[in-house]
Image (cartoon, rainbow, N blue to C red):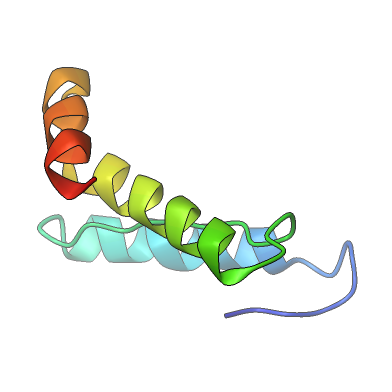
Length: 71
């Protein structure tokens, strides 16, 4: 989790680290979640589940099927 004032390079830092991980470990899946608009646990869980499904599925149809199984 990265927290700091606006325009201090948080997104650039995360992008740099994720690009490095993807380059050196292509078998690792990464889910980036922006929690700025999340106001409660339910919204967090919905956003978390959606991003994990998107990062773990390679095709749209597969993503839909995984979503159906999860929910």
